[in-house]
Image (cartoon, rainbow, N blue to C red; front, side):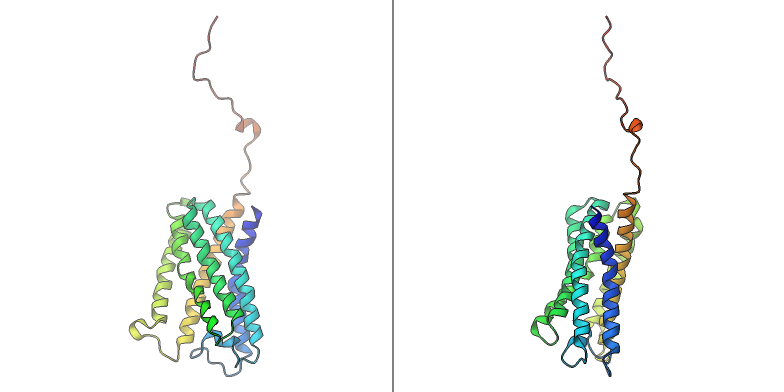
Length: 224
């Protein structure tokens, strides 16, 4: 299935689209305070060019949903754990769905809150590690993903106000930090899985003379 490789490479594009979209929209929003304001406000009514942010989120969202399917197939092929791989792909797809909701339902539309499903990226590293755990060819990606999950969990806790580290003037930075970390993992995991997926096609088939060896009989031929 060559389409799986294409979907994984789309997973590499999603982070780039999202980061570029936010940077461009923020640059074109004079006076925007990246620390005190939420990212969603870049597509709200006060933004001078809200369509830039919203269209970018829609494109990134569609790409993220597609990438989720590639993750599910690639992880199942690599680790053999079908259900766990399907959930890992689901979390990636829900991240894309969150971006799609953010672009379709502009802040402060009540439906904009649905973009919160994008926080599902929090669980994608955990399920990826689970899907690949114990597979020697993917040991580094599995361990990296598990460690990244706990790192993301810590940042999410700080973002939501645990230990009162976050303040009203830096909530935007925490939001960007969590999103950037999630997207960084997505790009790295997509790259590693795509490399493995392409490598499987580079293994040459066995020669016919070696593949079709004659099996030895498990009985002695009758003598006349």
